[in-house]
Length: 395
Image (tube, rainbow, N blue to C red; front, side):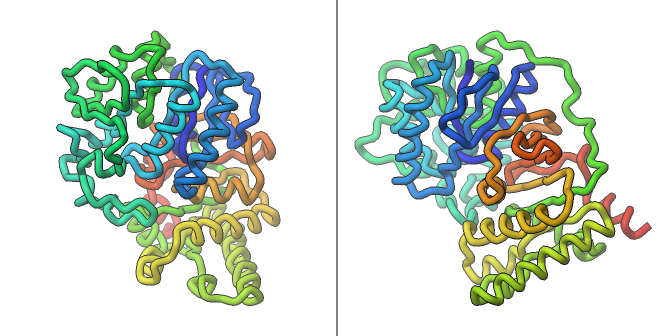
């Protein structure tokens, strides 16, 4: 059995999708006491949304559970641009699971996310000069990987050229310039190493362990039933696409700005009005986008956790009163907040539209299918094209 721990829910789903690519039976859970019946158990730890101290405490609990499972292979999935409490969690797992060496390979060359001489680039641009500089929780101010990780003097962390060999103890961070570099690094690994990275390194490790990819189609499913899309990301393309859809149709229901300043009595009334508006759009169109005003959130310095909590509350209210077959979510913090509010813990991944865009059956509510992706990933056109939706509505 393989065990992967991800620091957020969309990252866990991305790993689950890769498991499907290789024909593995997959379980995804947010619990740490699950006894799996699958080839691949993916645990969503949701530690990125916690304080560093709380993230370390939860990592200790999960590491102890992993010990009891005695997996053949352990992998730690992190954010590809190193957001979160990456170094603290790696050091915790190494201590708890008794690893003296770790190989850390963030990045995703297929998305233009590369590391060259210890510096991080997104499509050739230093990461701190991209939209990741404005991340509401983990704003990136340097492309230096050691600074991104907040490496302390006492930490044993080494930057490695892709032609170098891993020798000795500590945490080794490898350069990744092209996707094949992941396979080169994977060939250097052995069972004595704690393996950490983004999704593509996990795929490279499965290939290194002689797992065979299946030929199944991963993109052909279409949503034909009532669909609720919840956008909890500030990623520029998603914000722009939704604004364009809102300008052309009535299919977007933005969070009422008054909600963020209302007293407890008015807040409940505003939530009810918001949920009723969403239900009305669903009745007319079978499709609605729920989002928040990015400009308003920036101007008022609103905490992402507050926005995610309100999104989760209104989704829960809508689903209690309306049958929705497909719940689609972008943004890991929003996805986690919704699952926590609805008390949904166990999922069976059933379809991968594209890397990181995964459809899962909710085991607590078998008639509900949940599709999610990281906020910074694009929606594939095989699901929908916002421009085409707008045309359909006008016609």
